Image 1 (cartoon, rainbow, N blue to C red):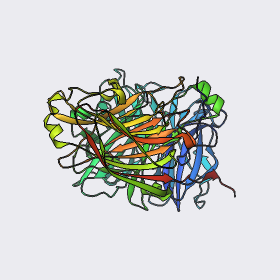
Image 2: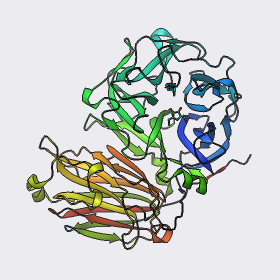
Image 3: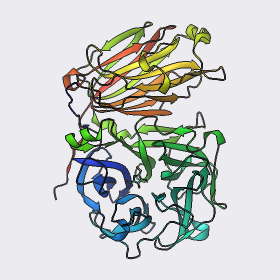
Image 4: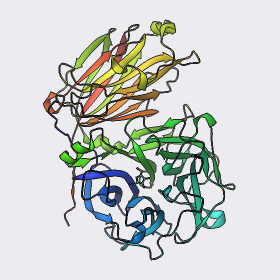
Length: 539
Ligand code: DQQ
């Protein structure tokens, strides 16, 4: 087995050591962005779940704070699980989270800051009334978790909160509760939504998006002209985050997807790679909705214990409605990440013949922000009759497979002789309906010479509108590659552990493995990325 250097990231959030999973209760409060997260203070594997805590001025540089909440009562003795923050109009914060009880029953608990004047929110008090919600009789005792941020319903002078679960037929469901004070709750008889056979819905998220502008909306913005609502669930069955855009009926208290065939759990994913248990919050400073997501490990638990840490959070993403397609969201790294950009190099009009690889001569290649634009010869598109039908990134041969019009793109975290490479690529193929479509994929199969890793080809189709070039943005940070195609219509995150393509050994290449057409890399800009300042807070 190759010599492994288990690379921590340099500008992604991760704890100093040990295990992390879901982001919890993200919010902006008195000048600081707060991130809480599922954390095991004792080990690099899941267990003893507490809330880790960090604050930032800009979502990029972080100060680690002491643990915010630990298992302390019967109602959370088996873990302080995932929860969300609601900022009340009078400035108070209601933090509602799932506790796993001494008997491992999932209940919902309330916590609030011990000192609301402390912008760092160092100390948290748990309510005397905990648990504030117990599972309804017809719900499994271990299928009731992850309360959302609450939304205010003016007509009933009350808040509503959603909680994920599954019913007896393995249908994923979102229950809704009404509360006036976050202490007493009433179950609304109607479900917010359910989707057949999608299993347990973890980490449900529910929020409005503006169809008229790029401005984010406060979670309490009700349905109305120019507003749609997004419902997202993390599927316990397959560990992917699925969302759908739809309409919230405030009177009925139900949500309906725009397209039944693209419902939650069977349609779009936020990210086609290693990405789970995500959660959004409304940022009032920059009037945007920001998405956090957990990117877990592709190495083994044994290795995690050896290296002493596991998991990172992806770079927070701004989420907007894609008014060009009207069918998907756009996710884009928050613009603050651009403050880490240092020197850049540009390349233009590089023609990639069929079956070619071209090195891009840049100095270092482990911390990068890349923007690239490709065009494929129009006459080739006319010959697209040869393009294969029913392409699927995951079951294809990845970047090594060859079709008429793909794959082509970039190889990152590659070593000089390409024994290691993570391929980020486009592939044009025919859908089962015969129409030409574009796929966006990421191939980890050759990402490392090491064997004890999960390596996959991830991806999906990506909408490309008339007259658009093929564009991709890639954030590279040692052991994570986050890619965004067509302005964030389709996103893929990989965790990779190269053994040669590390530090000075890492390179970037362009490639075109299509058999039927040359491809032009119209423009490529690559920035070296600084490391973020992520350190303990010294009082
Ligand atoms: N992680 C938490 C649960 C949640 C799951 C426990 C999702 O609350 O359902 O660590 O990753």
